[in-house]
Image 1 (cartoon, helix red, strand yellow):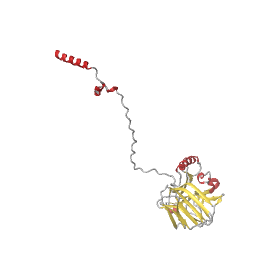
Image 2: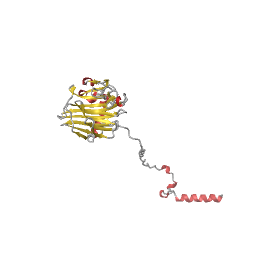
Image 3: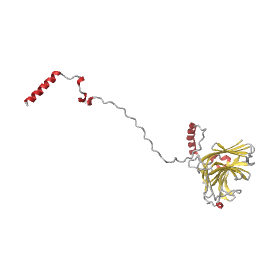
Image 4: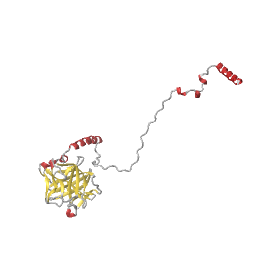
Length: 304
């Protein structure tokens, strides 16, 4: 034991003789690292998670067909204004300009259907002629068992062109006469799915019609014996634009901005009509309560 103590003492004496260690001889691994400042490391930015793929179809829309010439910024501004105007609309005629039309309804008696004169149309609404839920369209509805006019076997909820409070009548060989429609056919009778959504009528018969039969949307003329296809597979509820122009003894029809028909037809005592004209009745096997329906979002007529 005495020998061990002697050895330790000699070692301590030797270390004291050497003096304190220099900084360069310090073994940093043996020092208290807690006193050293901790460097601030950058925090990596987290990327947003990648969305899961979906197989769900987009929701259906009632937006109008795309117009390639439309300015995007202007469209956004008008969208906000259009929504505000829609909220303020109270009656259907505010969308279609009541001063230029009167309305034939599928109610009344056979050969004498109810009508709404131009002076009363501005504040008229019923289940046959009403605003849609978004208040940006007029819903025309006619039932297959409804009342008909004296010259027709089929009921209608349909506008008839007026001029200055009188029934319009113009010659398709003189001047230029135009009707523009922004619309969608939303219902057809089940037994015979035929609805007429717009037409030029002349004298005692139609000159041409915008006619949906099944899924085939056409321009019909020559008393229904001839047609030009606008859409061979139209789906109910699809919104479309159609422009009908009568001039120089010809009728031209544009469908969604493209010329679709140029026909050598005219009427000497013509006028425009628009709405839901149901081309069936109970005698054709239709349920009297089955309906045809058309929504009109925009309607303009002009003559020059």
